[in-house]
Length: 532
Image 1 (cartoon, rainbow, N blue to C red):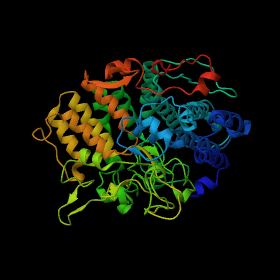
Image 2 (cartoon, rainbow, N blue to C red; image 1 turned 90 degrees about the vertical axis):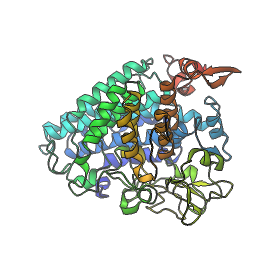
Image 3 (cartoon, helix red, strand yellow; image 1 turned 120 degrees about the horizontal axis):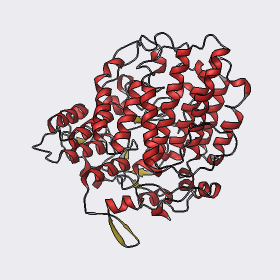
Image 4 (cartoon, rainbow, N blue to C red; image 1 turned 135 degrees about the vertical axis):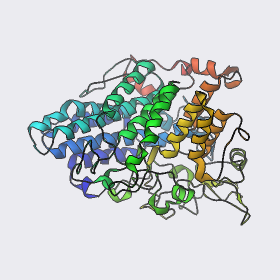
């Protein structure tokens, strides 16, 4: 995306600036974020007059949700630490998360368990859905099609925010209209109802959003807000993005029939973003592309078609920040001027996880007799550095500046392919599941079969563990895996009482506690029972 997009529109620049300012400060003002945006930006009477207003306000929704997911590095703290693979060096708050002490009294834990930052984005999306059509009467450049596509994106964004929240907290208040001023004191809505709303919203919006913006897509041909597809790919949610989110909602619900259908749609329509309209292709990428950004294909380094669902922080647009990136937690010398990383994967864990001698992510290179460094640097040292993701300002893999520009990637082609393999395996389509699994990892140097991996479901989740390490998936994969397996083994211990996964989930242990700040501000909210 060209930098002029941000410089031309004041409201969007302010919105993103505040979001990133909050992220940089650790989101210390998260309890005020919805007030800032609902009162100061989106409700101004002069705000819904021009095409530029439409663009600015839609992009501000993306900016708010980007901030919500990554502030205080919450995407990784919540997704990768619980029963995960990372060892914490010296941060007590992160050690508490690893140990399952999610109600420990630490400022970071209190902030990341406060869901108000998500409701800021939800409110902005609702406001856009309600008011953006006002622009049609004032600016002939803003067409009905443009407005329809914009509203569809806002609906997908709002639904994505709700799905993201239900994975963290379970039941959450379902607000479907905008509010100005104080946060509405609404009780929690059942997760089932919230996810039904999300599915319905996205299915309707998916009929409207194009596969590509600003190109030759027949749904919306021509430039989009004056920009072509290379400017938009990886920045905004497409029809493929919508179906990826639908597939994940279905899998989270255990509805693997729909998960298989939705993921098939994504893979069947990959050609809509393959060397079309001048952008780089949506493709499976090799190790050097993934970890070193070879040919500019890395989903982490820039806005790219390989970012199928995610939020980029491209340095060229002034979005590099010190906080809100996994690099802040995992990198150290020689990549950045830092003595030790805040978290790392131990040598014992690495050897346990990466067992295939041909695995290009980590194994010993037989030609050189050296350990591969694609995922881990300095394996022989006390703390191997997890260097899979390293986008250091402006787009380097090492440097003296600790500003980072990596994208928060929710899903990429390898991820959704593995989700489809999971769905097929659960449904009993073993042959197709193996083919799909091997498609996802073909460029990692390994191959699965029933001979070497008789437990296919376990093999798929083992592959997700390796391929998606450090991408915020580990805890949610553990939950889905245990739901599938229905094991009677001990999963957790509370107050010296052993609990199976089923007992743990029934008690609400899968979900995080809600911040006391939220409960104090809204008496209608009840704490998750496991944490009472």
